[in-house]
Image (cartoon, rainbow, N blue to C red; front, side):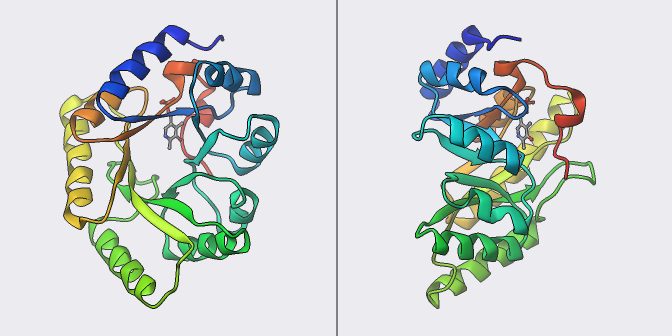
Length: 227
Ligand SMILES: *Cc1c(COP(=O)(O)O)cnc(C)c1O
């Protein structure tokens, strides 16, 4: 399926006006599709699988900002640490420590988002609200001691339930926005996908992750976060 250029231009102008960053989610899609959007000016791309990201990064222009949006295993951080722009799905303190170690090895500071569990479904990863408070307190304390100096936790990321009940989507995104606002520490709130981005933006998202609307549908097995 070709890249939907018309949808891209429309989305881009709407989101630009609202100050929302568009991450084009290119997982499972060929390098040629990414190149096509790149030529239209897109620079932020999102991938969920480490090997796929590493392969694509090597083949595409170096000024692409690569977002890792999948579930990241600690033992794979080293493969993306040299170049990744933003890791969205940090869901444990241990993972943050490993990102810090690998960033230090590469003389970099890696920006991260903490994943918050807002959906009804049990299978999705992330911290709950008290977990976020705890982890932010820990990070602040570590930073004061000069530790974790190679990670910068910029904000939060969440995925709403897989539903078309708008009321529920509003409620879940609103819950995440409240957790985000409570901290006075964050700048990036990554929420919203092809099916629910308008609701997410209306609830205060400033970064959306959009795949199928731009690149066409994927096979169903790859459309969810899987390990
Ligand atoms: C696949 C994926 C997206 C994009 O989903 P679409 O519905 O295709 O827009 C966004 N965020 C995450 C975490 C994903 O895994």
